[in-house]
Image 1 (cartoon, rainbow over the protein chains, first blue to last red):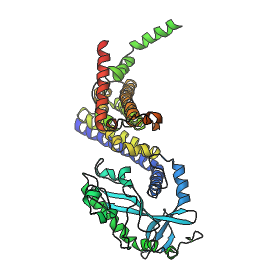
Image 2 (image 1 turned 90 degrees about the vertical axis):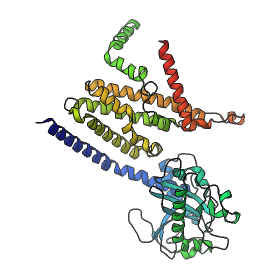
Image 3 (image 1 turned 30 degrees about the vertical axis):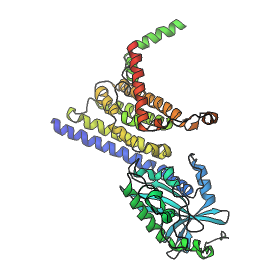
Image 4 (image 1 turned 60 degrees about the horizontal axis):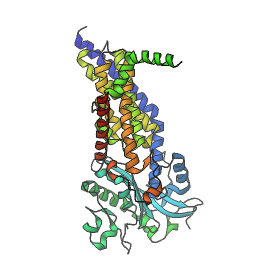
Length: 245
Length: 215
């Protein structure tokens, strides 16, 4: 056998063995990896809602306990009525929404953010207070932004920026919350500062796309927000015993 | 009894395996002597935990790739040997990455791309090409283990100093008493940043070179 055909044969054999190993590793470990990803999403829901302490690792069991106790995953239709308890295993109609509960009382709601980023999609959660206007928290669980620049969106200083911002004016008109170019205090006129968070230097485009993504998401949830703003929580049509007070 | 131990230690010291291990661990340490793998050493040494996991992952990858390449060394065609080595290394690295994602999710998120970048770490390809291609499997495995641990020892050392003086913690547990902070002690923010790692690694290199010269 010539040396080049021997090389070819060896390379083919190696490729087959390697790909078999990789396939086995990838499919064999998938259940654990998917579980980790789910817990991580739950952790981020809790983080956005301000239900877990910052800067402290929370064990998976505690995440699951808090999530089961304090969060209700539901779906709403386009006019803002709840249609069903959300089942993570199947796709259902309507928009996913999470209610932050304390006992039977609704403390606020959390919307999933799916935004375009500079290098790939940004996935996260934005938590709103029960007044339908005040941001309670923001968390990102998956993104592909440049570490140190756009990647700062997942950092604590950036997330804490969002707390207390308003998605609507005092009169109740929807405006969303945008990311300023530079510090909000300097870049935005005073009367609009409650609708802007500080930007990240070197990540103007990430900020631009994320602002647009959040505005788009929030406008889809506006019917729900309006009900919260007008304090018409009974209009939500929350199923089962946990009717809002 | 002591004499027996000393004698057997002396015999152990004469074996090839012992000499190779000392060489990899100390006399030709991949980071502080050969200045290899600096990129990941800068990136993952902010905390002890990430440094330790990275060190273990790299050790396993070097040891196993050395073993596999050494087992195949007689049959690997010379003209494609580097490609074969990289394929073996890449497969092992991806498996290590998948394992971390499944069982140490938080750590794997912090290590982010650096586990994948073990593929490009010069230490791994350097050992397979320079050692495993010419030595029997047992010794190649030991050589990989020793080089990996040599890398890990510097990583953990740097991470220990950076985490202790940069954030006042060891393995995430605060160790500097609150009273110190009240008395005006401040964590050194520079050590958390990449330049802090450069300085620390520089100090390690200096230390090792000075100690080796004295011998």
